[in-house]
Length: 225
Image (tube, rainbow, N blue to C red):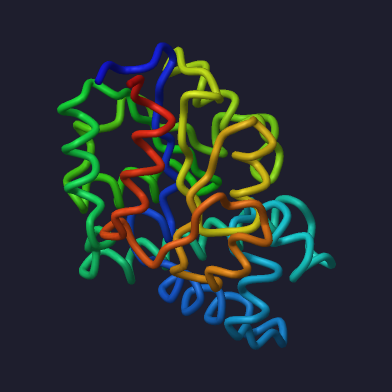
């Protein structure tokens, strides 16, 4: 089997490379608690998971100025990095998949709404830096997820085409971004259920990367018979 022209794999980071959502949830509760918010898993999944910080701040602290919103969310991200630093572990099966993709010369990128500092911490924490030729962060883009621009940018950086690529996401907004760019998307059920991931547009939903169906779907998109 040979590699399809324009093949590529594009990975979200939070909840996709590692199960980081519980740590984000704890950090948001600490930061938004003084504003009267108690954030449970349902609220997190509906209003936070996969959204850019600007949108999160607009929803939870609309009375604050734009500068103050940024200051508060920057503080939340610093708290997240402090909390996550000692508990970074790759999602089950991820490293085997990355190694398989590298052995087949499939280009890979990470595409995230998170600040680059968060992306760097997690990618380096799981020792995956060498697998990704590009890291696309919300810091660098005019539009974050759910807009398709992050994944369109990822495709461009990889010289990949949507039809021969696969994206990996754990949120509704991320799936909307990837499928909006025309990319077949695998949903990781680290934050919301497999049925919710499929409802959002994921072609396949799975708890982690050990499911044989993950590699079968990837092969069907990136390899030619």
